[in-house]
Length: 303
Image (cartoon, rainbow, N blue to C red):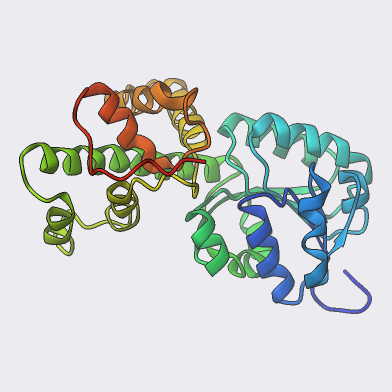
């Protein structure tokens, strides 16, 4: 612990689209925090809020009680943890909030446990808006004792729930992304059907909201589709990666998920063209399957 505060010292590794607002909430709550990012300017932007910055993961973690990683994918998490490992103190706690494969989370847990370091996988859902508001859904995998230690920190960023041992946070996130991806595709189909059938898609969306079809996806991404606003938010490449991980986890559990296979194919069809577009670009995949059918007349807003 820090000598000057009862709050744990935090190292935050990965201050990109999601990491920056998450680290911002921790800084605003008074946590002493050192930030590192591969593009150092993104970490430097947090200095105005009181963050220290480090040039390497190793330098960022050497005095940290809790290390939070928020990185693009499992292989990158593994690389950064390997770089930090020599400076990680026995008894410290690593919380990986990235979206990785369950097997990767279990490997991180085993490697760190061998050095006397605790680990929780705690992926999130809620996007940049949720990160800024501190309303992220946080799905945690680890021991009850480690979760109790992490819970107050995680509550600064959202609503944490312990769902099982290490690796199970990633399973819960895959369940979340399965529902998100499928609902995105269904909302796109509903709005395009409304348009093709001669109805006003915006009015149809308004009419069905509040009934059993209501969802956060219909509220937020349905409006994005109507506006053809595909600026991120979440990203096509991230949603596709998560759905691929869903199918990998299903295969490992001897499950067939036919609807998820179809949704994954849709995101795959636009992956090379608009990888950084918002997830609501599921509409673009559907329109590609239906030449001549288009929702609205506005030009596409793309990154």
